Amino acid sequence: MPLGTWGDVLPFARLGRELRRRGHAVSMLACELFEPLARREGFEFLPLLDRDEYQRIFANPRLWHPRWAGITFLRDAVLPFMRRQYDVADHFFRAGERDVLVAPSQSLGARIAQERLGVSLVTVHLAPYMFRSAIASRKVSGVSLPDWFPPTMKRAMFRLADFCGDLSFGRDVNKFRAELGLPRVQQVFWEWWNSPQRIVALFPEWFAKPQADWPRRTVMAGFLPVDDARMISLDAGLESFLQSGSAPIVFTAGTAMAHGGRFFENSILTARALGKRAILLSQFGGQLPNDLPPGVIARDFVPLTVLLQRAAAIVHHGGIGTTAQSLAAAVPQLLVPMSFDQPDNAHRVECLGVGRSIGWRNYSRETASPLLDTLVHDAATQRRCREVALWCERTNAVRIACDQIEAAALVTEVTSPKTG
Image (cartoon, rainbow, N blue to C red; front, side):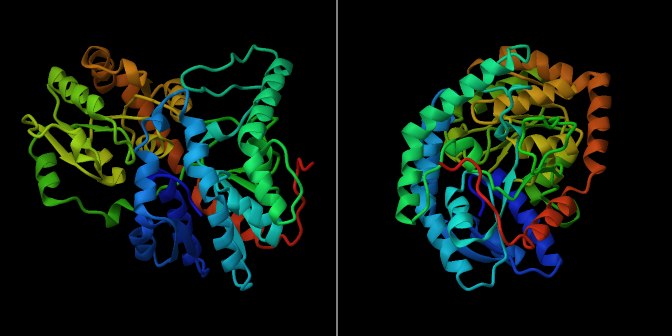
């Protein structure tokens, strides 16, 4: 039951492909936008929301605002679909044929189904941003509490945030729970929404070291390879472009970003200032100029697994899916984060020495050009990119994650933490 954009859904599809290979029946419960993907993988599919609902959610500019993104996502994309998620899970699991539900913590209906229906649940976290720690702080919209800040003070701030979250949004969850005869819960959006059985982190320890105050039931799997490069071919026009000159710079603001006109305008200027060719990726053509200059082409979607193998660098929003694929491709990254996990991912990429970052509002030809020029030509950065790419290959994240999902099917009784 994945929730979100292509970058959020593709890892679940990769897990489903492996589970099918192991002989399991797989059903995907997601936005109807992803039905072709599910059918192509051989999954049964049931829509949880339609294309119009999806587009309405992600067209809201507040969803990309550093201050309002989290609240907007909870209000527009999480809470309205909680009952629908539960109803679909109820329909599936009453037949007694499904063993495990796999979902992100934001799929609240999945967590309620685990309690009410007794199904096994595996919570999957794609990014370290989804783990809160009083020991090592996350980057939140470019700002974080320093690690030297006393843990007792951090925990006090967490309790205040939990109280506000429960008061403003948790009451909707508890109202629905009461209708189902379930007790009231607290810390809805940090403690409760995780499965009490298993949590799988789809990123490696070298990207985010697990902390002592993370849930003990967390298993670190690593980044998933979401595409098989050997089975993907590029369209003829793009293939011709790649063969006709030097390696281009890839620019993308994410598959769901509909407000990136300024980003792409500055990206074209940056590429021209560096004398580099460019590929612009956007599913919203209205963000791009009608006439692109020579050496610049646009596509709505291209699998990064193949494209990045032939790119000089990538400039992107910092989503965990794009970040992970860029690390695996050994390509330097310039990240332009907006909200959610993006600032935290950008900080970790910088710490690895394989990229730099610029705030979304500060991104321009003047700020981006010198950073990109250094990333493309610095030998130490190139060596570090190749080293990190080798790290990506050392862990079989698909096997580890699917082993955990299979093991969850053996759990017949669980308890729910933090109930009140």
